[in-house]
Length: 212
Image (cartoon, rainbow, N blue to C red; front, side, top):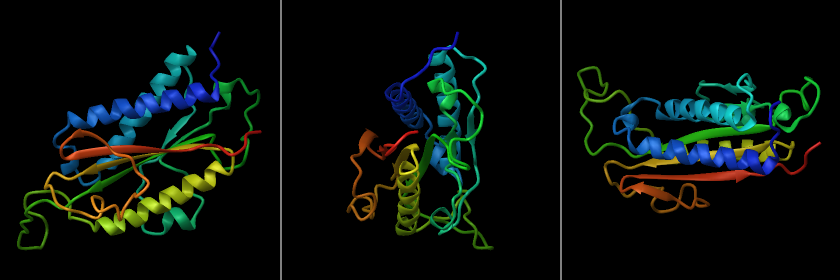
């Protein structure tokens, strides 16, 4: 017989998985050389959360977690009702009977990962103007900060629709630059954890305002 979870237990499980993934990031020195490190981090978080919920509920067949690896462009998160990268139908975890969606198109639990990454110390381009020694072009951290605020707004909207949300933010500064993150122009609400001298992370939780 599967074990049912309370909302508090679900939140504890999410936090434990985030801390586990944050520790995993410290052991992956090439992670932030990837074109889209947030995609790999989100995948790791989704896998860990699915397995943790199966273990905690003693239900090896539970699989109501979805993962979306698509990359939204500027304005896409704020302008549409697209789902966050990780979304969970948690009704079965709470013992709610029935399969119909509580609110059409809305999950019960939503998670997103956002990576802020400083530009490398040097950037060498080839004859075509592409990076010669890395697979990604530096992006404006202020632009990334604007996308981060869009994600905050999305999760805040979902919280008002009875959805619990968590935003996991990772900041990599291998070049040790003085960036907009360091001056608190980006994510001024954040209380950063510092597992490495070039890596910081934080999690912001969006509590469901009501639950039916």
